[in-house]
Amino acid sequence: MKKIFALFIAFATFSCTNAQKTSFSKEALSETLLTTSGSQLPFQDVLKKHEGKTVVIEVWASWCGDCIKAMPKIKELQANNPDVDFVFISMDKTAEKWEIGIDKHQLKGDHYMANDQMKGVFANSIDLDWIPRYIIVDKTGKIALYRAIETDFDKINKTLKKLK
Image (cartoon, rainbow, N blue to C red; front, side):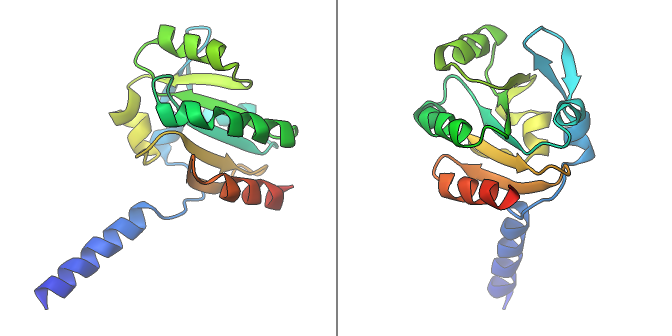
């Protein structure tokens, strides 16, 4: 009986951590991100900048092989959804590598970098466990898709079609 109860608790805990969220935590919203101009901007202000628009947020890093492999898919997504705003949040360790990555991969959209990378406050506040990670925010500011990775482009496309 104890084993069954332990399995139930483990399943419930795992299920809750991957649950679809519809809004960002206060911690995530207040966390600041580095801008390409070198200033700090709270994540809530990044979202405010895109109010009234559907937004695809990609969390990535220039050193991430899966992120680089997904670049053609993100560019195709952009070409097929010109009415959608794209926000890229890097988990790079240095601003120099981040900026080189933006230029090298010719990423079109708004760019920010987390100040404390994959294990930091921002990453934890969005339950980051893999990159690239995609989050879709609808025109009302509600999260429409909380967790998608590079193998989930069908799910991403379906979500964007539903939001049109």
